[in-house]
Image 1: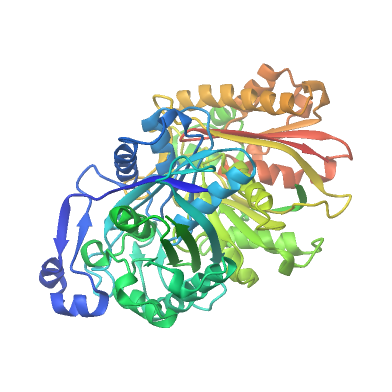
Image 2: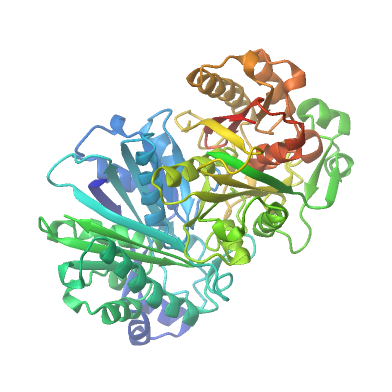
Length: 314
Length: 314
């Protein structure tokens, strides 16, 4: 399958580290040293997970390689839903007015970009769809407790959309050569390490250290596995886009895998942790850099826990 | 694909209509005449969407046709999540301690049982799984405003679990002969008719009449389509299990389709609207009634909107 086009949407409000200095007495240097984050975006009044998804789709469909009416599947992903009944995928179907196609939203926390793409791959394998629209959107600020000195400053808001087809549509397509996802909820602290319980409290991360360790273990492991399945080595990879949770995690991953820092793509510095949208936004932001024949790894890790990796060939 | 075994879990607390007579001055006769509901179950302290899912799985795996370690995919569905990061599917993976298999939760509101099974069908088609565990669970009481005189009395809590395999495991298996899902969010009121926005309000249904009309249109339509694809007529069907939203919707559906009332399976009388778990609970409760060779339709409709139908052959 092939990524035909990718877009992203970011809310306009920028929240710098000085906001958390005022609020929580955390210095900008302290935040940068521990997370790599300089600033993040925040939704304004009237914006939410679903509106960001629709906005990303609107950008995507400008000069799209085919008509919106050829889309025959919509898959959404988020862990910060505006509405759990009228999901972001349904909001997008409503905006596009494409009737009678399968529409579903998924969640596997920060790793659900790859779960969503794997669900698309399944519909392609069943011959139930040929051209899918994937939307990933996380509105962390809707559930974040900003006064939480442990993780309040980590989160950002953003969305991305992509068109994925079963068959190649043009020379500009990015080939999804392999994709693997997995749940890792078997670990002792997986049920408590990072949670979002809408009824009792927002997103909190009481066991950040445990998340850090498993993120640094699973992302290299699943990336290596996908590389091996494709008969490729580290030297064949032009770029890696890991889940944007913490810049120290990203540096740890490339250290473990032996990937030089110039091959690491990051947006956490400007966007914070934008959840399952983070890697997709990075892919969209850097699309112009990728040259024909270059290979990329996108690898993710999510609370719960869950993980995945995808090998892309431009 | 085949349903190898199905189970259900219901919380023990029973809430009769007299509860809503006291609370909202709605007589039991009035509730029964408009909805068919006599009573519903409610989760107790410490119970939630994820614990109910785990409880249903525990019941399922007693005398299961194969070892839990053969399960190679877990798909959860809910629109009333306890935790949107540690989803019900992840809670089940944690309870079962089965590492390194794909784990994902989906939502398409009340119709997501069929979306979950279609996701499984996709993994089977990709040869990425052969034996899946599907869990559907809705804890409406966690988000319901009981003092809402429009829909407060409609909702119940419950869960179901099923083992589904790509190949037949035994003569007791139920064959899933066909399955179709669709989004219907294109309708004018789809974004507002029934919503669950965790941050601003619970589950509310400001346009119940619109939901009623579309439920009564889509469920017969998609059921007829699936029957036609299988070369079957109404007379070939032994039972129909529609989404348990309102008994008047169910009666309307069988009226439209020309199905006699003795073929209608319902549990809304005792359970209320248990969301995406309703049809699966009904299938589990009535499993003993189904005779070899009998054919059933399961058809669903959800807020958002979305719909689906599945043809089962015992």
